[in-house]
Image 1 (cartoon, rainbow, N blue to C red):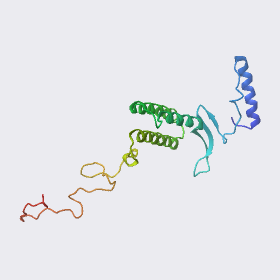
Image 2: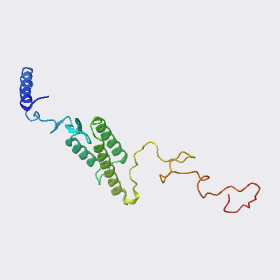
Image 3: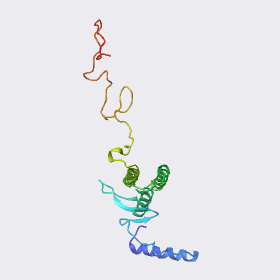
Image 4: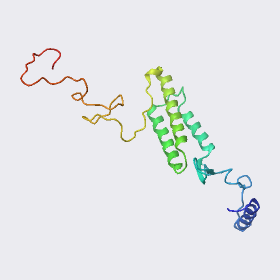
Amino acid sequence: MHGTRDDAETMRDNIASVLTPLGLRLSQAKTRVAHMSEGLDFLGFRIQWRRKRGTSKWYVYTFIADRPIRSLNVKIRALTNRTSQQDLRSVLIRLNQIMRGWASYFKHAVCQHTLGNLAHLAWSRVVRWLRTLHRWRQKDVRGPAPPRRGGGNRSRRTGSRCPTCKPCRSPGTAIGAAQPPAPGSSTTPDGRNR
């Protein structure tokens, strides 16, 4: 509400008096008066008043609270125990279900950085588990696939992505490529011109 702390405490007392005839009461442990710059936790979200970066304007932002992040970390660590003998397929399906549901619930919060950290945690835990299970070396494991972004450098001829991620030319137009013979000249077939 808009007003001073005394106004907010008066409003809290009024709400408590309205709820009493209904057989309800405000929990003293969960009910508190706080300024929006301090922030408050509600249903797993952290709601806080902050200044927008690069401006002097203040907005109310919704973040993910610390407690849900800790509980998800515990779930990921429990599923990907290094000495676990569970079926890989069922573990990956369960991890996917948990993380998709979690991301779907918190999708309206400012959470890109947090979700990236959790995805990295899940990836590294699964890789550590598989390395222990199969006795792989570090070089036997590829990194996670990079995020798909639009555009990129593609071959002009085939449309496929170049493995070096540099602009490509087709072999016939590359600088220093073999030129076709001049008309009327004869070439003998050998190992170089095929």
